[in-house]
Image 1 (cartoon, rainbow, N blue to C red):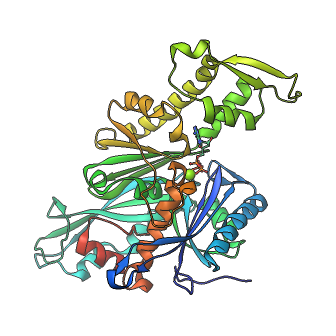
Image 2: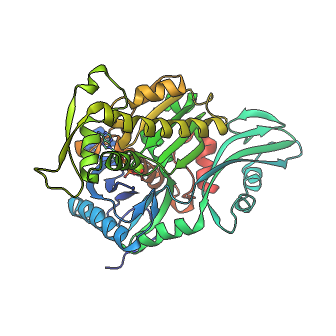
Amino acid sequence: MKRNGTAIKTKSGFVAALDIGSSKICCLIAKPHVDRGAYGDSGPRIIGIGSHQSRGIRSGVVVDMEAAEQAIRAAVERAEQMAGDNIENVVINVSAGKPRSKLVAFESSIGGHGITEHDMRRLLDPSVLMREASDDREIVHKIPVGFTVDGNRGVRDPIGMFGEVLGANVHVVTAQTAPLRNLRSVVERCHLHVDAMVVSPFASALSCLVDDEKKMGAACIDIGGGTTGIAVFFDGELVHTEVIPVGGNHITNDIARGLQTPFAHAERMKNLYGTCLPSPSDDAEVIQVPLVGEDDETGTVQVARSMLVGIIRPRVEEIIEIARERLAKAGYDQLAGRIVLTGGTSQLTGITEMASRAFSQHVRTAQPKQIDGLAEAVSGPGFSSVAGLLQYAVATATAPMEANIDMSQPPNGWLGRIGHWLRENF
Ligand SMILES: Nc1ncnc2c1ncn2[C@@H]1O[C@H](COP(=O)(O)OP(=O)(O)OP(=O)(O)O)[C@@H](O)[C@H]1O
Ligand SMILES: [Mg+2]
């Protein structure tokens, strides 16, 4: 069956999100609004869930098209079976292509008259923004984060205001073209049309940060299997994003190499006994570790838990330190008043305390906000990104004047009336 199309919803009005992770691939299908009769419409309801171990993806990058295609197909088919419908269009995540954030400022003369929609359109002319793309990078998001009138910042809705010069700050996220093409291509090989790409940490932040955090300033750090993504929100908008190619799988590899044990066992040990907080009893606690390539019965050694902690801790420290440095380099270490950890690796015992110490501030661990129908099995912190993608898909599918929506626009901003106007026109 060939599936193609440009509408974000299926014929039956469902929307779909596909998180192509380094550890697992997850697909959610939802009804954007549920008719509750006398009680009116409510939010989305998930009617299809499919998850499959990831294949052919390393640190968010497609490294084996065939293997990735099989894994995506398996996850999507499971979700479709549960939903009882086939999907044609998906919103997917992007961790590949070294996503890069840039705040771009534009100005336009308005000659003292009241600012009109026409002025806004002229100011935010897409061809001006396209300059940010290059031969090897394409634009993934372009998000207006604020306006100025005659240099006065903090203007939320300039339409109707008087001034000489109208300015806009736009957060442009670009990523390398070739890895994005590979990602799109592997999804298309599964006969799915990519409606929108959302940088993975942006998606995670959409589902994990509460509105006040987004307004006051917060950084959501998603520590997954092969990547660590950072999304900084300020004044309700995404202002910065980073993807670092290191995650929990690196901890597992360190354990496997350090203790000469199979990867599967290293993963199990990490999840069952792993911690980055040493305790005085660690030397006395002994774990039985099978050796790689040896018989189950004879080829095991006893290892003190302190040794496991000694392997895990430096890698976690490294991940947190890189994230801290990136935030500081971008100038958001102070601005992001709150740090919210998510992603599968945020479940590692002691990681929140370690991050709190490194950032010298309160850190909380988050899992996606509850969506109707989100089964417990897919509601942990490893599913923040797919839940955020679904939120993005729902918001975009249910916005008015669907045909005019620029899919690289975020669906929920603080821009109010102007945000609504921008979504329809920009
Ligand atoms: N209880 C746990 N303790 C420690 N680590 C855990 C735990 N549960 C899962 N993990 C780790 O979380 C990682 C997977 O996280 P997640 O599902 O967020 O990754 P992903 O989205 O597939 O990958 P990425 O976002 O990096 O492309 C794996 O490294 C796994 O070992
Ligand atoms: Mg992920």
